[in-house]
Structure formats: structure tokens, C-alpha cells
Length: 107
Image 1 (cartoon, helix red, strand yellow):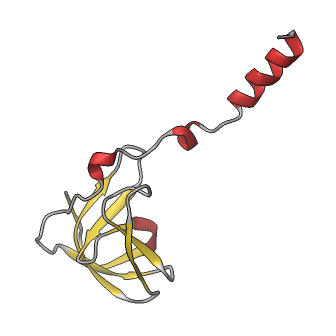
Image 2 (cartoon, rainbow, N blue to C red):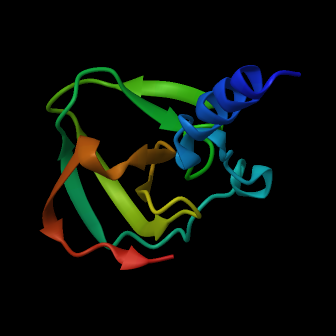
């Protein structure tokens, strides 16, 4: 391999964001939070995905419409630093929920 080809390979590899290479731990998928309601809120993004765990890699089980209400059991920050809410429907990524009643407890 020439020095130019080697340098191009190093540049190509270093251009990949670190977070893009990380995947969500599979043990979180299928996990449900506690069953005690601590808060509620409104969905702020139409067709917000509901997952079976607190990670984008977990299966999507349904979608919630903009403005619909969700009851929140607890909140959890996953290994990549994203905050999720465990709701009566499943896990929803926190930027898609505006908590307007109560304060979500930690899972």
C-alpha cells in the first residue's frame, strides 16, 4: 500500500463520528419501567415512535400522534446519554414529550 493510500484510509476512518459506531445494548430492549405513574405529558412530534426499550435500536411497537397525552412511569438515560420516558404505551424519546403534570421519577 502506498503512503498516499494509507493516509487516505486513515482520513476516511477518522471522519466517522464516534456515536455513529455505537449501538444500543440489546438487554434494554423489552424492558418495562415501573408501573407507578409519576407524571404525564403531551406528544410534541407527530408519529412519535414508541419503542420496547429506551434506545433507538429497540423495536418500534406503535406511534403516538401530535398532541396526544401519555402517562409516564419513569425516565431513564441510556448508555449514549439519551433521555427516555417509560409510558403506558412503551418507551418514548424525551424530546418528543412535554411533561406538563408531575415530575417523572428515575427508573
